[in-house]
Every structure is written in structure tokens, then in C-alpha cells.
Image (cartoon, rainbow over all chains, first blue to last red; front, side):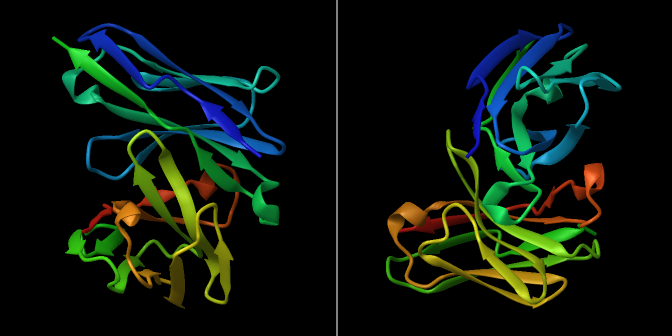
Length: 114
Length: 115
């Protein structure tokens, strides 16, 4: 089975940097996704990692260590609009014998304060 | 226009009623999914379909059924709604290509309340 852990809530200040961690245990790891979800809205895709290392995309970066079962999402130059939940999702090619299914963590609610 | 649409966006119903939630997509994706989201529990997979003739149970399929009417349409039914099915329901689609191309794209959600 899969187990994904991320902090429930975080608070940060506008203009600062925040790191949201995600740890996972899975039998057939085949990629990790980060999604952003504003309250009451659909999750939207932010980043994808399948190899170890850092993927940078503008103000957002995502890091993966497969040996440690660990990822983080780094948000720089925080803006008020970054207040949202951030969902870590692991793709497991052995899930339910079907291949390439996603399991989501509970999400981290980030509050950005002025 | 949105690539993944869901109807209705909000629904209030009573215990025991049959409810259908509909999902349509214009992305041309083969794979479609239904999730429910509850506070603190994240997204949990109800059913998924890899093509028109393929239907599979997810993590929490009891009390739900689905129909894949066409590549672009995937509906979720609650045969006899109960209050603990009150949740936010999302439809999602993905391409079968693998890698980052297998990213799931979500519809706007349906907020269902069962009284």
C-alpha cells in the first residue's frame, strides 16, 4: 500500500520562502506530483518529479529523493495569492494491479500573511 | 471553455435518493477518474476508467456506481444517498502516454450535501 505524510498547516509571510515537505512509502514508485488547490476549487498541476533532484519552474521548485522517500515543494517570493492547499501525490505502478495510479496526501494548507 | 466540466456544481438531496453526477471532457484523454474530497482526508479514488470498455473500483467504491458513456463522458451515481456521502466530488482525466503526460487534470468539482 501507500502512505503519504505532509504537514496539515503552515503559515508564512509575504515575500518569504516556504518549504512544504512530503514523505511517502510505496511499493512501486513511478513519479511524484504536486498540486495547488484554492479553497473550493479544483486541484491544479504544479510539478512532476520522477528522478532525484530539483525541478525549477518560476517561483516554485520541487525536489525528490527516491532513496529517502522524500519530496519538498519550495515557494519563493511568496504572494498572498499563494494561500492555498498543496497536495503531494505519488504514482505507483503497482497500485491495484492497474498501473500508474495516484495516491494523494491529505494536503498542506498554507496561509500567507502580510 | 473549460476542458473538464462537471454538472451539477452544487446539489442538496435527501437520504435514500438516487443522484447522478456527470463529467465531460474535451481534452481527448482516454483515462477518467472520480474522487471525493473530505476535510483532512485528501482526495480518495472512487472509480476509474482507462477507456470506454474499462471500469475499475478504486479505494472507496461501496455505495457508488459509474458509467462510461463515451470517451468524453464519465458519470458517477449514488444509488441511495446517505449523509456520510456529503463531500466535494472531483472528476479528473489523464492521457495514457505515461511520464508527466499522465498528469491528471481536474474538473471544478461538485459539492454534494445529503440531508
